[in-house]
Structures are given as structure tokens and as C-alpha cells.
Image (cartoon, rainbow, N blue to C red; front, side, top):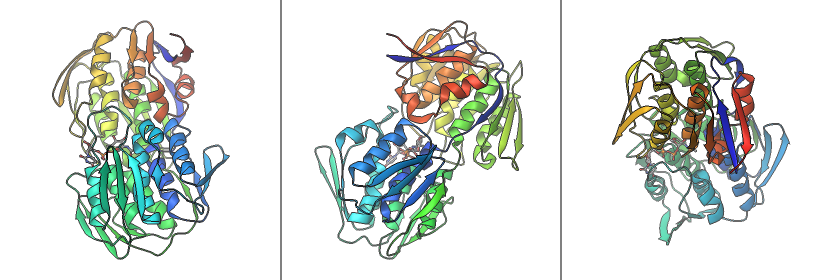
Length: 421
Ligand code: UD1
């Protein structure tokens, strides 16, 4: 079985280029099925999740071809199915992002309940409520959700929580609907803005993306376009933490610093130097020998991202004092705390709150990536641990990090993929 082996690697140094954002690429790939003309996507990260979304599109009748490094061409003229197979849905939760576009394009979609990262119960009620508000009829037959609409009609709707996926799915269902849709309490993540920018290039009429109120005026059809995916703010954040935890000096390139505000603020609070260079779209992080304890609380954007909580928990094990991490977005997203404790961290979790006492001398051992970002946290911990850290279940890591070992190795990290039981 493939594992990632990390050895103590203090002071990472050098430059790392960030890939396109997984969480922007996935909805944009799904949205490509809304049109019948060629779509060219650039900076598409080579990831397991992107591969699965490509398979989903192909299974629906879309033609998807790789035309260069990180470049895809998609044509969905011959879209001929509205059923997403269980085998694909169970591999990746985000496969449900094709529901909105299928409903918009074909008036029907059948999907199994989603699988994916094991981070608490993740319902899709808000997606379905949104489709219903646009006139779809929802049926739930033993795990298969069917949504049908002879005609989607724009409506005003309010999300009980600013869900990223629900906001995206509803936008994608509404772009070809009749009339105007307004989503209140919409998610404001940069990936939503990227999706809206992409759809606008296709001819959609969307305003307000990036605010909590998004307005979509339905159009009759969408055309082809070329679009470059935005940089991955979570990958960027992971390498920024790598610089901090190892006391290194890393220049992170291809990053939009306005997307990184909570990460920059919290790293500065620890005492790291963080130098933003907007002109060159880069951020340099310089770690220090002694860093101060901090508190974080995950929130929807522009708050601290839940997808950076695990990596910060790893960092907190090296900060001087008592750190607090509060997780408000997902239930049960502290599974990495037990793994970090196996490495001699001192983390106690009670409900939504984790207290991390630092600094602790971490010790390498066998650990398991319980989800994607947990896997990244274990790599970060392994960089500063004494001895070897052997991480299993690394398929989670491959879902969301492109070339992770070579990017870390280029910064001086001692990390390799090994095949062992
Ligand atoms: C997306 C990201 C994921 C990130 C998350 C929060 C993608 C592919 N994934 O996931 O990496 O961690 O945003 O930033 O973009 N909820 C409901 N009902 C719903 C939908 C969501 O109760 O119908 C709840 C969830 O259980 C969770 C919270 O809302 O507690 C946030 O989920 P959501 O924003 O929908 O996350 P995803 O879109 O699944």
C-alpha cells in the first residue's frame, strides 16, 4: 500500500508555485455541461477529485480531453444522461455539483447520496430546497435523489446556512431558468466568484457573486469560452504553514493575497513575518525560533477556512502557550487531533473546541490521514517530528494536492512516497 514517509526537515526554503483551486475547478467542470460549445479550462489541477469529476462528465455524455499540462477542453453537445452513477458519487461527494447543471440543461437529474471526506454528517437539504424553490420536484428513493422540472422558474430564496455547494448548485440550476433568481445568505467564497465569472463568460447574467446576495437572470443558452482557474488558497495556506512550522523562509507564488486574509493575520499573530507582494501575486513567510500561541475559529468566508483548521492544529503543537481552535462549520472535524496526539502532541478536544498546548517535541510514528486536510496536517507535523512519520490512507491527500511530494521536496523537505504494508 502506498504511504508518505516524512523525515525531520527543519527550515524549508525556496519558492513554491500554487496550482489551480480544486474547489473552483470542480464546480466549473460541472458547469461546463450547461453549454453545447467548446469550453477550454486552464490551470486545472491534476488531482484525483478532478479525475473523478471528469469521469462523471464523460459518463453523462460530455467529451473531455486533456490538451496540455493542466488544460482541458470540454464539449457537452452530446450530453445524453441525467444519472450520476453510485460508483462515482461514492468516490467523491462533490459529484453532486452536476445536479444543478443537469436540472438546468435536461430538466432532470438522478444522483445517489454523496460520499467523500469523512468529516461529520454533510446533508444536501439546502441544495434540494433551492431546486424546489425553482420549481423542481424532489423524490428520494432508497438513497437515489431524483429532481425533475419541466421548466425551472426563477425565485427568491434564503439559505439557512451559507453553504458553498448549495450556492453553486443553485446558481448553476438558475442560469438557464426563466426569470430572476435571488439567493440570500449565499456563500461568498472566492470559488463562487470564479464560478460566476466563468458562467458570465459563457453568457450567463449573474451579479453579486462574492456578496451574500446573488442575482441570476436566466438566459436562453450559453456559449463556449476559455477560463483560467483561480489559485488554490488552501494549498497556498498549507505551504505558508510549512514555512512557519519549520522556521523556514518560503515564497509562495500564484496566490491572491486578498483570499488569504485570515491565514496571513493568524500567521502574523504567531510572530512570523508575512510579506505580501500583490504585483507579483506572491506571499513570503518567514518563520521564527519562538512563535506565540493563537486562537482560531472556523467560519464561512471571509472567516477562517475550515479547510485550514487541521494544518493550523499541527502548527499549534509548536507554538508557545495554550492555543484554542473552534470548529463551527463541520461536525466531527478533529479526527486528526488523535493522530497528532499519537505523535506526542497535547491536544484535548471537547465538542467543537480543541485546546493545544505547545510547544511539544513531536515524535514520528505510523499515522493515518483521516481526511484530505488531516493528511496535510500530518505531513506538516512530520516535518518537525523526531524520526520517521509514516502516513497511510494517502488517497485522501491525492484528492486535493497536486505534486505534493515534489513541491515539498523542492523546499528541502525529506518526504517520499513508499510502497509498503
Ligand atoms: C465546500 C468545499 C469544502 C469546504 C466547505 C466549507 C468544495 C468541493 N468543497 O464543501 O472543501 O470544507 O465548502 O468551506 O468546494 N450543509 C447543510 N445542508 C446542505 C449543505 C451544507 O446543512 O444542504 C452544512 C454542512 O453539513 C456543513 C456546512 O453546511 O456543516 C458547510 O457545508 P458546505 O458549505 O455546503 O460545504 P461543501 O460545499 O460540501
